[in-house]
Image (cartoon, rainbow, N blue to C red; front, side, top):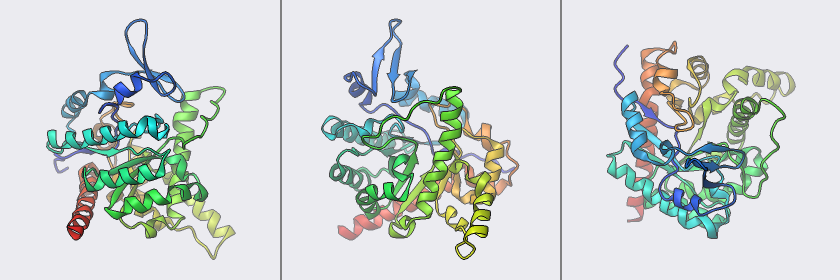
Length: 343
């Protein structure tokens, strides 16, 4: 196999950039607290975990990247934490500071770290202004949005103003599991919580999100937006044949548009070689990217998922870095063209 010297991780999260101070000042979820033994704990929407340096010190992450051979990493505003859902007068300034910090990290690390910003979703006008600033002024590739806004066509309508703003300069949007503003945390399963919530339900939700996007007009109405569905599109690589069968038998005059799935982008965060092989068959390697979900998961996605996969050398090169690089180049070109056109 040709040596793969570039490896781009397109799914990780970062809780630094001023968020530590913001969360330390809070006493309601989400917030940070000190345990009696001195450990820092994150009290999140549906649980609590130890908040180690991996979460907020980019230098620790860079060391891990170097050790595993990753050459670039996409950091994102902490998806699923619910920070962006707080009242805008409490969080908009912190989000703005965070986004500016991400932009500075890109410069300081010579592009080794790039990032997706957050937006204050409780105020749509401010959210629209921030996504414009993220793309026009900061040059970040895009933003992360809670995927519960894309569980249905009706819910996605709430995002129309933001999508219009995002489309203007071109924007990458990661649709990551997370609640909507004002949405209650759903009841926890009665047993085996970590598997039912973090695997079965999460993967199903990712599939719902992909369906909403491809079965709506979003791909055509917002051609300058690139949508990333996490975790290989959920269960889609394993159930798309059933979906096609349902359409073939129940609505033969309206076949399922499987080809539209290739107009989205996907990462392999927290999954392995067998799942990746199936995803290549459905989406194509040119729509797939490495993803670690660091620091929640700390596996090296190249060694864990891509290297053992039964794929061609060309497909492995594509997934390791080329899909991500082509995506970033496309976004840079869209932004540059728009900026130059308005002077």
